[in-house]
Amino acid sequence: MKRASRHTKWCTVTTRDFINGKSVVENLEFADYDSLEDSCRDYTWLITHGAPYHPGWAHYQADHDLNALILAVSRVYATDPGYARLTTAIVAQANVAPTIAAIRQGAPANASFSVGIP
Image (cartoon, rainbow, N blue to C red; front, side):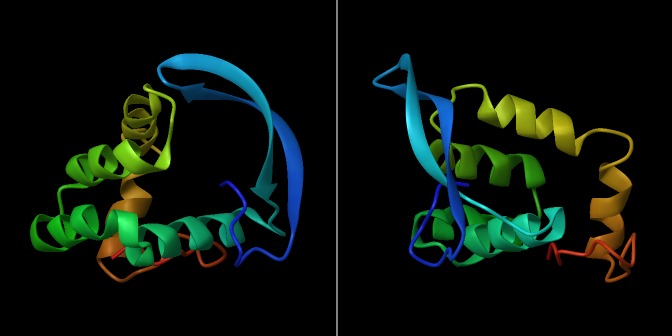
């Protein structure tokens, strides 16, 4: 996640971004987390509280269509035109889908990793 004012730790990373449809290499600041769980919590917070994501989040709360949420988020969150496809593929993996389902049911799928996906 690119660094925002709420992040207290960050690092500069050489990355590929898409600007005006062209792939460019840039050195950008990204948030630095102590754990994967912290990273997931911050991403969840961003999607559920960030103003650019309100329309997509509101639709998700009404219909719980995760694929539609991914598409709505990807239009704002990522410059990579393949972000939605990649995210959808990750969510559909056999080891991810049951975790999401368990969290939706209110039961952490893994006591050490629970980010609270509503």
